Amino acid sequence: MAAPGLAERLAEVDGRIADAARAAGRDPAELTRIVVTKFHPASLVRELAALGVRDLGENRHQEAAAKAAELDDLPLTWHFVGQLQSNKARAVRRYASTVHSVDRESLVDALAARDDADAVLGCFVELNLTDDPGRGGVPPTGAEALAERVAAAPGLRLLGVMAVAPLGADPRPAFARVREVSERVRAIVPGAEAISAGMSDDFAEAIAEGATHLRIGTAITGNRPILG
Image 1: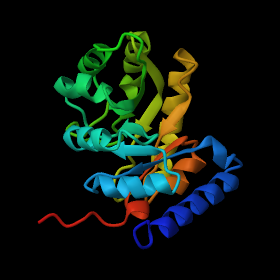
Image 2: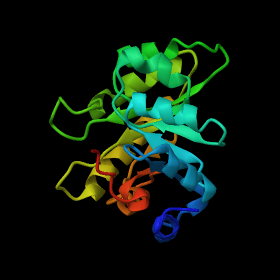
Image 3: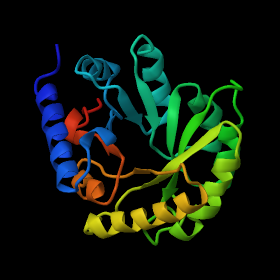
Image 4: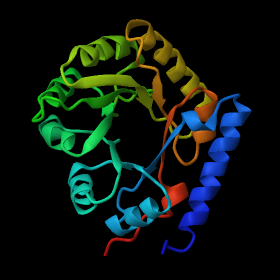
């Protein structure tokens, strides 16, 4: 039985996603809704799976690996959406189908070193839309070069670009910038058409600017549990 309110929150968010897609003249079916479950227990993921959720997102390798192992009886697709250390890349490949936070050449090289010669990992080039070099992501001016590096790496498939809108600002112009970078990347890697953008507070604006993958946590999962 689902936790109180979980099914209702999921349905409400899915309704808002569909409304935003139609408002943008898009088909809601072309969007991938990823439920980010960081800090929530595997039991919540199991409840989400019972409600039909298949795409899950995690930010931290240790937590993600433990959940993926505990829930390996379920037909889930794991997306790694947090900052990733190069020395964790090979381990993340063992459970994740996609990494949304590829932001440097050394990480590309680490992800390309795989245990299974037939496995292909989906990758998004993460963009840093702020002036803070300490944040994850490559500057938009460096997106094409990194995209080419991903596209050329064995065992990796460039899906597109990913970004987080800067805090405290209107997200729509930020996502418009992401769309522009996406168009530049597609010019050199034609298959890289996806855009990972939009979270609980700004997914409608992201959809309006072409987002295909939405990373939604609190609006669906509720507040993070208090850790004792």
